[in-house]
Image (cartoon, rainbow, N blue to C red; front, side, top):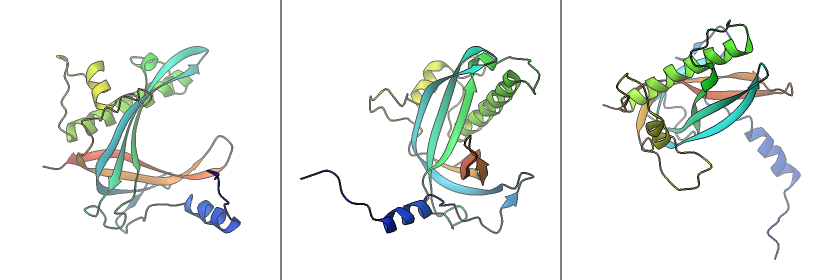
Length: 197
């Protein structure tokens, strides 16, 4: 018996249509200057992990740390997207850009801006989840971040203490253009508003 099976043309068409799945935008949503829809939802963190990446910026190898939490939407928010999963929180940080005073228009300046925004969003999410900074200067240690966002490639089965936490968050949904010029719907957590009290 083979592990393979036929996939009909009708099934392929249905799958392609599903790939365009979007969240239902409530009437209360705001529209950004870029045309993205933004609104509040409520949900539960179902997974949290990290990935170490590397990129070349201005001829220099730069380590990128991606921290991600996948959230399942429940009915407490808009009530229109219950069960939608995942809405992703991402913090993308370039350690080589921390403290950089490069011009904002340069590649390293853009990395520094991305890193600062990600750190601010991360602080908001961790505060809402009741995880306070563990360093004396008010920062987060490597150990704390590794515990909250276990490396995706570690295969340890370690579950993040963030899993199961309920949060109010702001969703941003809009069209983006890929490197290949194709359009896709981008849905992400813009910011975490608060945790459940």
